[in-house]
Amino acid sequence: MTSTVFTFNLSGSVRHQGLSISGVTVSLFELGGTGADSLVGRQRTGSRGEFTFGVSPGGYRIEIEPDPNTRFLRTFNEMNVSGNTVLNVGLVTGSILKVKVVTKSGAAVTSGEVVALAIDPLSYRSSATAGSDGKYALTLPKGRFNIGLRYAKRAKEDDQRASSLPFLTSTIIPVDLQADENLEIVLPDMCNFEGRVTDIFGVPAANVKVKLTPAIQDNELLEELGIDVTCVTDSTGEFRALVESGVYDISIEPDQAGLLFAATESNVEVFVDMKKHFQLAEGFRLRGQVQYELTQLAQCLVRIQGLDRKIDLLTKTDESGQFSVGVPGGTYKLVVSAHPKHAPSLTLEGSQFSGLAPWTRMIVVGGDTQIPVRLVQGTRLYGRIADESGHTRTGVKVSVYADDEKDLSESELDVPLSTCMTDSEGTYSFFIAPGSYWLAVHTDLSNAQRIEIGTEPKNLDIDWHGWCQVKFEVVSESGQKVPRCRVAYSPYGNAITGDGSSKSLPKGSILTDPDGVCNMTIPAGVYSLRFSPPSDSAFEPKSVKQISISHDVTKTIRLAVKNSSQVSEQ
Image 1: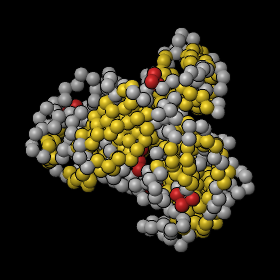
Image 2 (image 1 turned 30 degrees about the vertical axis):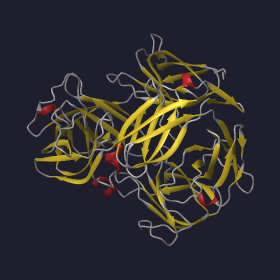
Image 3 (image 1 turned 120 degrees about the vertical axis):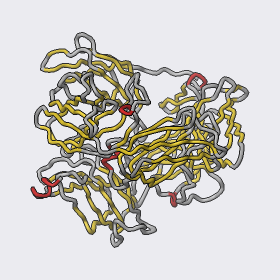
Image 4 (image 1 turned 45 degrees about the horizontal axis):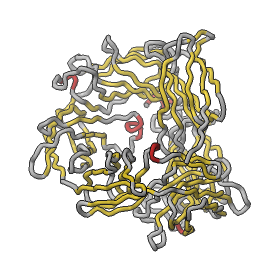
């Protein structure tokens, strides 16, 4: 199985007012669709500001990160590469915010990272660690920002010095930056939080990651700023951190090489210095061996996702094709993918795939478990999703489920084996092993189709009725985009803040992107909507009591500006 993969040059230069800028970091990411973007490469511009990458066709994001000691702003561009591509980037300058962080006694805090997140209508994010002068310098465009501080260990730092201990503060300071400015952040009084992690017999657990996160469910800003702290236990199972008085969620993640499994504690109150003991239970050994025909396959990627608890583990097979992890009892989704060197690419219907199909199963672990994994050559399942009028459905989720001789339900145990999104032509595509499956569009499980896949590619077009694709563009009355606006929807007549949805119509919420846009796919019906910008926004929330959705629609929602007294109080 062989095929030709075409590569193209993605090149360009970085300039400012016509002058070449050398030494600028250029990072290239492949767009991941519904998953995370992956780093393709990173380099610095040459003496003429030039950069070049060799890439295959697809979607990419290129990020330009100037030296933090300059006034140049970070920038990024997204593009689709289908041939040799040239991108010339012009840098613009901003203002410098210099931040000094001190304790109440005046001692400088240099083991941190200052994070700036723009308030609408801007969409910009930046962070900086302390420089040689002990201050944090951020280059930002003019506008309003929320400034937060999180722990970031510096190289060659003594973990036992109080000034370098991991710390966590929820302090956020709003800044209206119109020119270069200095800011001093004074840390509040901190509590000494010490802990010890052992197994149920009291044996210390070393190299365990302990993460503390503010337990403020409705404060999305803390989550967006990444305000949390992670400690690692020493050989005695102990860790220590300084935290602001408050309530925290704690997650504990042991070394994957052992049998201890993760644990969480919610709403832990820390208002004074305290010590806490955490016990981790021992799990079971999940083992497996991966083969293709009679050959054991090394370097296969194995992913284990918990369905009844928050566990997501990655491991690889050894030279004998074996893998082994410790997990608690429960139900898991296991996905095994061959390394490319064991699975040469295969071309089907003009599309390239790995020759061996991913192996995906739902398994129940109630004790030590051995799983034989047999990879086989895959084939393509593809088709087109259209409505009753023949219009294609773009950006719609399509999922494949295991056929376990029962109808699909909407329980959490019905987890898809694989998921994709339809492209601009309404086409979906899977590369899977031959067998029997359920195929469902979006969350419409009641209309899922049972299908049989042989060794030959299978085309299955679907006419999908009764669902609508809705796009909201949230702007101010003057046309400014409103990012991070929460759009909540529920069946008309049900309170948006209520606990349930009607059986036929869903409820939920979604955030607008940096352009103030959100997209949702929902059944046709009558809904109530509420548009809630961030609490620090300059705009008022807005409710739409009743709206009938019967077809695909794009609507612009305009938010009023808060009165001056409300804005000044923020």
